[in-house]
Length: 245
Image (cartoon, rainbow, N blue to C red; front, side):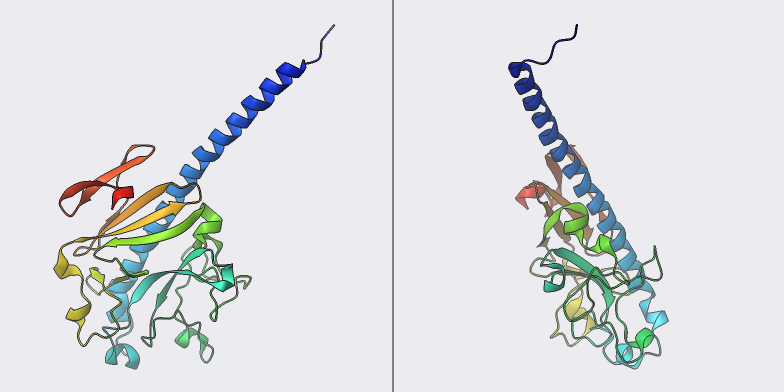
């Protein structure tokens, strides 16, 4: 005859299950953070490719011809009321140089600045943005809300790109500055610095992960982890941990 669990056995079982759930949550949050970083890295590389093709594709665009050093393809991080101030990003071409990802209300394909999603041409590379597009619009793409999709709650810029919220490339694939008061292309080029741009991602579980972009070549990569909590790479000619940048 089978006997029921005693109160002590049930208590131990509950404690063990609780420990498993806690460890599982931490493990999977790490996986989501890396997954989000990989998606972001791919989009950084895609934005670079768009920037390198821009001059040829927009040769006859009067705005691009007049303000070609202000209007570049870029990846812009934003927390907007449209998405309850969750961390998102968008990829767009700033045609008029105002710094915003305008959707285009006059002639859709001509005025629209947001890139078309390469995974679904019926959608845009934006998850919703105040004054631009509602989060429930059928053209938005969920993965660009990296807080909801991957648990990334904060994005920091360090190194040569510190103080900004966007990644911009020039026609050679080098990093570009969002400086809006420039008078020439050379004022906005970060390639001359010879330094790295570091994007540090923060997860909701207080984990951190860095993506590094070389200012001259535009080469972007995720440095290897020494262990689950230590990501070390060369920054300003010194070995640094991601959390210490």
